[in-house]
Image (cartoon, rainbow, N blue to C red):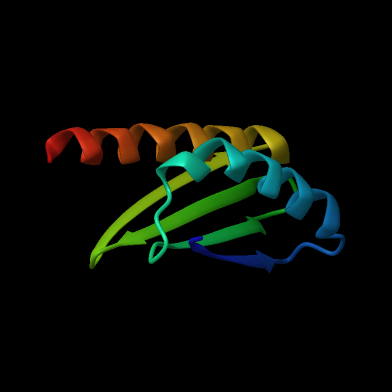
Length: 94
């Protein structure tokens, strides 16, 4: 299984977001290989804006996607959708 690390910045109660992120990451598990690394950053930029960043590393290649939104769950959803598209695009290049 891939290594998945979570980083939270400026967020006090991280548990609901971590559970939501873990559920969303299940959506991409079929694309993950054993030596892959997925770093997830979720933070509050200002009082209203949530920021989600995924850094996906495979075989020395890095895919980075980001999303911002006033709704924390929308920020996560947008970032996951972008990551899925990027992974599929990279897979089709080979």
